[in-house]
Length: 344
Ligand SMILES: Cc1cc2nc3c(=O)[nH]c(=O)nc-3n(C[C@H](O)[C@H](O)[C@H](O)COP(=O)(O)O)c2cc1C
Image (cartoon, rainbow, N blue to C red; front, side):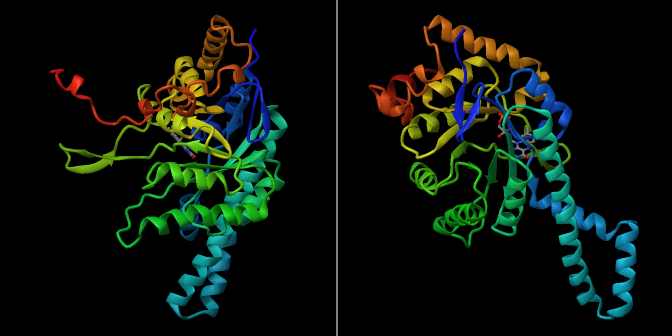
């Protein structure tokens, strides 16, 4: 049997198949199932800034007796409504933050107690705000590593590319001050100089880059004339953009690479590893088939390795990375050649 074990973020994993952060990784039951069916590691569902805001708004209207009595006391001593609201909001934000964080920390500890594969926590960051404080406690709760999901849509017309990029560096610098566990960055591809920016990010001391976060995209419902969401789940043909960038960056970044988006079967896992990914992260496929598909993907990988006489992952990982192939331009071609333009 080929040996599928490898390292990711400095952690030993039994295979490179990682369950990506999603609703599926927010229950202990699911984590146990994924681990028992062979997952190499799990990334827990992210804590979101919006989640804390949502929780704050919910608390403002809630019947929670502690909150109610606090609001009454505060209202009786403060007459200025606006001041009252700001103060109340600040108080409730810290309350909500504590509450959300406490639940998350407990979940990390439970996951660590119940499964024997690496547990990677995840924070969705859109600013530097308070995340360093979160990160420290996530480490104390026992997480093996931390993935920071930073996805900034460069839609603010007042902000230039340098300002947008700087946010990523600032978040990393802040978080790294407070934690010693490995930190990975999960990011998108909206950088004007994608290759250079990702290389520079990899030089900040992070242990991994997760390429790429799949954005939630809008769509338009032409019958009801409203904006709604496009496909929440990826399709199995969506892996090629990630494949291109994994291949271009492999051997050039100073950290590990995890490939994600559109990885639904063992063939795509193999392609990403050949392009140079250290691991792959999958989510949508488990929404379709639950974790029952995991053993099939693992045995597909083993069978292919055996057929090609590869006894371990390092025998073929990166074999088809851009820097290792005879025609590197094949990963950079974006226009159809004249040859293809005759196709009608
Ligand atoms: C329902 C759902 C929830 C998700 N939640 C998170 C999340 O909390 N944090 C995160 O970093 N990624 C989240 N993702 C993104 C996935 O981790 C993954 O990067 C993305 O779906 C692409 O992989 P896939 O093609 O295998 O689905 C979510 C994806 C889905 C489908």
